[in-house]
Amino acid sequence: MTVRAPAKVNLHLGVGPLRPDGYHDVITVLQAVSLFDDLTATTLDPTTADPTAADPTAADPTAADPTTIDGVPSGDQDGVVVTVEVSGEGADPTARGPATTTPDVSIVPTGRDNIAVRAAHLVAEAAGITSERVHLTLTKGIPVAAGMAGGSADAAAALVAFDALWQAGLDRVALAGLAARLGSDVPFPLTGGTALGTGRGEQLTDVLATGEYHWVFALADGGLSTPAVYAEFDKLSEGRLRTGPTPADDVLAALRTGDPAQLGAALVNDLQPAALRLRPALRRVLETGRELGAVGAIVSGSGPTCAFLAAGATESVELAASLAGMGVARAVRRASGPAAGARVLEGPDGADGSGGGP
Ligand SMILES: C[C@@](CO)(OP(=O)(O)O)[C@H](O)COP(=O)(O)OP(=O)(O)OC[C@H]1O[C@@H](n2ccc(N)nc2=O)[C@H](O)[C@@H]1O
Ligand SMILES: Nc1ncnc2c1ncn2[C@@H]1O[C@H](COP(=O)(O)OP(=O)(O)O)[C@@H](O)[C@H]1O
Image (cartoon, rainbow, N blue to C red; front, side):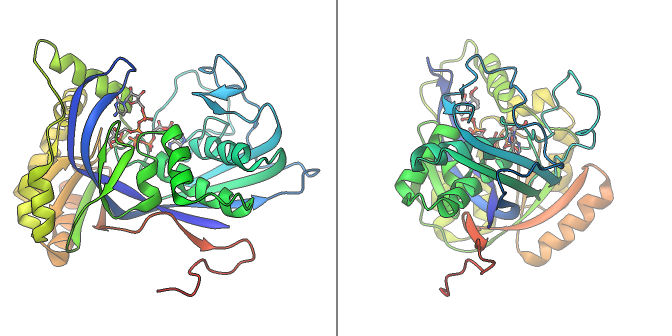
């Protein structure tokens, strides 16, 4: 069973003051873009050891209660064992070497703190599954800790995969409820497209959007931690009166016209000053993209990826080539949006997941 899920870019990210629960109210417009992670779930014979697997019982040092991680069942209380193998973005070259003490946010964990494993345990709980052994292969095209919601995409893909694999019969509303327990950004890659997010970002409404948008992403070396960027936002906000998140009216109006230049001029990211404080070199990346003709230039979410909107497909090819030539980014990727949400590429019997539909 293989499920593909998309990355996102925030076209508008208005952030309100820190709430008592440690989150911020946001008003955000998210667009799914054609950078994808593929998650393959393979049911294993419970009696066969998997030599490629990381130790699934490796303790998460942040978990005070070993039976849950952030309120999500860890699997320790039942016989559901999910092992993980990662390739592509964020695959740890030292994964089989000695353990390091400094956590690197841009490396994907392969233990039970992998968000796809946590998603599996949530579905197991909902479906009453108590004994299964499953191996997950994550083929990551979405950069890690990069403000593009790659972990959220994997979690959404896992929810869809395990719902189908274990015949849990969860409908879209139930899946979105589990998704919101895993992270504020997890409901969005289930649906994809373009959507308005409120609350922590997890409450989604459809947006009237026309046209196809051509993006160029400048990938950075190393990631940025989302909580660290929000904390920097709080520091920068000290002494300033912040009432609520800024509304997304300009971006919503631009999306109705389908005009990239209008959308480019309307892009807003309230986390951008915080990301630039933590990564001053991103200023030069943004300036370079603008000088090379991007109609919009913004830090993607909490960063450090920089997102450039091109006037059209041809312009995006030229922009990507020129940006790569300037050497300001680790890598440059082109993508279009809106992209579809999490979908089955290959079912458990090897059949494709198109269901014969359009
Ligand atoms: C900033 C955004 C923009 O879309 O995403 P990224 O750009 O990192 O992908 C999101 O708000 C990130 O969503 P997500 O990565 O799911 O965050 P969560 O797991 O829910 O929360 C991680 C931490 O981020 C902070 N957080 C998150 C969401 C929110 N509305 N307010 C917050 O303050 C909190 O410190 C929280 O403990
Ligand atoms: N399947 C996963 N893919 C990516 N990161 C993961 C995954 N599971 C857990 N993580 C952790 O989540 C953190 C955020 O990753 P990611 O979702 O890619 O970034 P962002 O929140 O900036 O969009 C990473 O530092 C990583 O350690």
